[in-house]
Length: 399
Ligand code: SF4
Ligand code: SF4
Image (tube, rainbow, N blue to C red; front, side, top):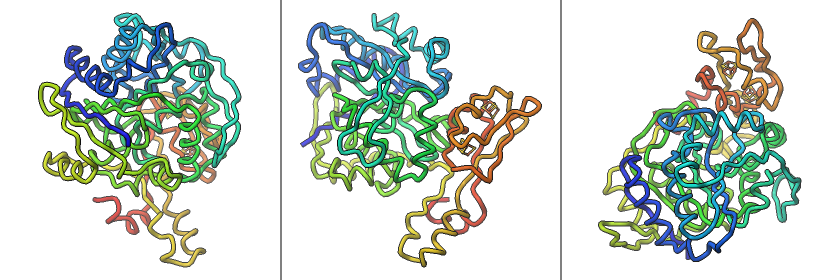
């Protein structure tokens, strides 16, 4: 039986955040697992050089509270991530500054990771790649606390605890793995393989302010008002995705985790902090009812088309054709592009180049991974849904 703890928290005022984070960690008795002198890696979501108000990265006050908690248990907290783009000291320094992590480390006494080495590790029982590179700080950690941001995601529909762990892959190697695993189900299994290797000791989702629409980099901010935590990252994602109105069948990591026996809603107990640390335990059915009573507004979905429902309904050859023709593609907005080249370096298919200080793409070889969309600092990459997909998936996209 796995427990997911949910705390209401409306803003990033540090006292409120600390109360929420300590409430979750104390309820889950995380301190009992932390031994004095341990190196505890705090895996933040530091996707790109965005400021906290842009809702792309884990908020620094959440990270600060987690790090202070670790210190209060006698261990050393090390803030870690391998953001999109090159994994080097200069890039990390810029991202730690912009995202507020430098301040979070200063205020909590935590260390910022600058070790950019990695290890090639074997993954037992992997469904995709059985040997991958993982950053050394994570491989060597005594304990890992995974602190994700709640967002929608153009390729994976949703990003929370499981997807956050893709940041243990060093820098541009992420693009190479994207190229090898182009289909959402393959990529979801790759994420699960990574999650099974990392096995975070505890996961937290920062959903105080979240992102809807075309996340994870250029969606819209939602003032959602919740912090969630649990030791099973799949079950934590199952609960969080329910809260934002997403069906399990829409989230490839949950679909595949279920097939692999890693998530079972019947096993989940949700612990709600009703008032003044009076906790109430309910099961997933009761929680679904509770969510409907709260009347939480479903998050806007990203502009991608789910093609799974075609399977078995039309002949295979037609299905293949429709799937191919319905794939969304990136659209580069010339006026917004500053020619920084982040998309060039992160495109797994190597089909983007800079011409006259603007990004130019050969879409005929595009694999629709949307890494370009994810890393663009100027929101200059939009997602274009083909007309045929709009017709086919009108009902599915909820528009
Ligand atoms: S599209 Fe975005 S990431 Fe690519 S060069 Fe232009 S501004 Fe940079
Ligand atoms: S152009 Fe963008 S979506 Fe297409 S393969 Fe390159 S990074 Fe992926």
